[in-house]
Length: 361
Image 1 (cartoon, rainbow, N blue to C red):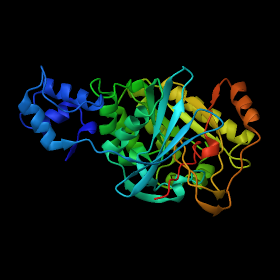
Image 2 (cartoon, rainbow, N blue to C red; image 1 turned 90 degrees about the horizontal axis):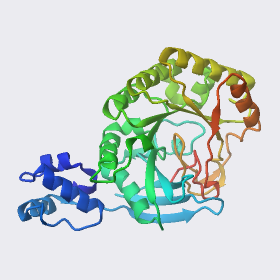
Image 3 (cartoon, rainbow, N blue to C red; image 1 turned 180 degrees about the horizontal axis):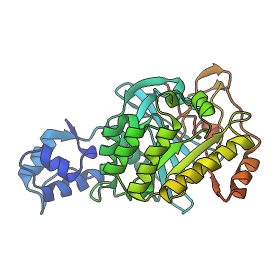
Image 4 (cartoon, one colour; image 1 turned 135 degrees about the horizontal axis):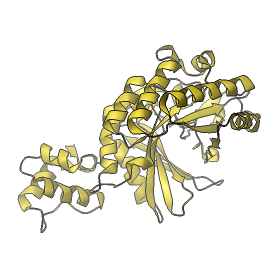
């Protein structure tokens, strides 16, 4: 059956013979407004019946919901076809506006050392409807307000599941569907150059986030095994192409780890990388500095955001500690003329903070 919440009007008209595009727009709107698919003044009975016969609106099973006691973050654990994954509702500065941090895979194959999702390995990709439905499910549970944005920053590497991610983005931004501004959507990656280039072509208004970890190749390789296949220079070259094609400043994320990537030398290397990027593109990346969130210890099943996912289960020795040099690191960037943003990563008490997503499979 065709998952009706994951098709655009054009895709619906192409998939169901006899349905006109104007009717498809009305029918897609019905689905996303929670109305039954039915005939009306602008939809013929034959078209509505054809769509009902061809499609359905599958749902995710909500396994758990946890609200942080520290801040207005909420974590959801969903299940679909026996697989569990996590989603986080993120409050924005404007009252009653929220962003949804969605997962694109169950687990992740990239094994970034500071991300709990990477400990899981990859179970499977999520389908486009499973991605869209995370946003719809969070929206349905809002006490008030609306979903303003979406970040592909939960479990998994979005660019490793790019077909489904692009299909989901098309529905998220479709005015007849969820109607989210593409500029309020960010796709975060550990650094897959081909995917970055394709994203620029297919979704040029969507923003890009890249996990840098360290601007020094050896450190980055130790933290992010994907560097063995895609050197940082190759990743940055693709990011530069994205910036030139879209004219959007990429977000560069650095999770500071005590004694690993937080030294003056690390800050200076980042400064040089940014300066070279600006010289090449004329666009300055937005630097996002994150505090490390624990992924080990007597942990529970967690969730999170950033460029990966969540919290590990069982008694695991945490491999890293939060850096005490964040202020000094950012001050060194500022002294070089590079402002940075300290990303607030909420929901740590419910394992919903950046790097903690790791729902039990």
